[in-house]
Amino acid sequence: MDVSVIIVNWNTKEFLRNCLRSVYECAGAVNYEIIVVDNASTDGSVKMVKNGFKDVIVIENTENRGFAAANNQGMAVAKGRYVLLLNSDTIVLENSIANTVRFADENMRVAVTGCQVLNPDGTIQRTCFKFPSILNMLLSSTYLYKLFPKSRFFGREQMTWWDRSDVRQVDVVTGCFMLVRREAIEQVGPMDERFFMYGEETDWCYRFWKNGWKIMFAPVGQIIHFGGQSAVKRPVAMIVQLRLSILKFVKKHYGWPSHLIARFLVALFFAVRLPVWLAMALVRPPVRAEAAIKMKAYSTGVVSALFGQISS
Image (tube, rainbow, N blue to C red; front, side):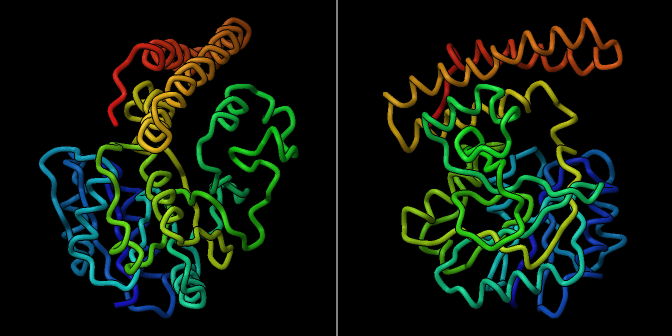
């Protein structure tokens, strides 16, 4: 078995259906299996997979165990030389899986390979980013990376200046399409399940890097990523969780002094955005519903970052 495709699902039935179809139609010349780990969906996802995709291995959870834990369940039964973590809200384009496996086979010290990710309108999605650091967190707290997206300094965290058109070594590959070498997993271990959602791929890539493996981006394949289909069901919690996961990473890997500074910087990230969305709510009535969600999330985030309990 070349690759085990692991798809974690939580109430994204129609996206999951289209994702599975795209794997069958566009994986390319590669031997693969598909494992769907369902986190207690209530939308009929499991029934749809069992009825429409007989070859798919289905793991049914009775509760939402989170992204890391569910992927670990899939990896525990996977038979492939590689595992491919693939979001349910993606569409695999022609030969992308086979081409990415071929690239990994030609680069034996690469633990993780990411491909080119497109928005539904065909524009490039900014996948791959740098490890969290005090400087990166300070810069991302401001809007300067939006004002100067071509700046290698202001845009360093998300690498906003890079068009994702060439092969290069990176710090972190986004978990929507993440081809991981079995040998590297056996050395480093599976995902850290203390990261419920967000941050788990950053932690994993950091551990691979610390053990001498490379993380690579290779535009040898493409997928379409719709993005945020699970998160949209709990928007406030997910907006807050995205930033708090960075605090968990900093606490785990950099220690308490950095963690205390990081708390302030995450609070600053939320605080800077509050007046912006307040102004938008006042002058742009069509976005008031979105602005209300953002303001609630950012105000919650300030309190959580400064005073909340961040487990390690």
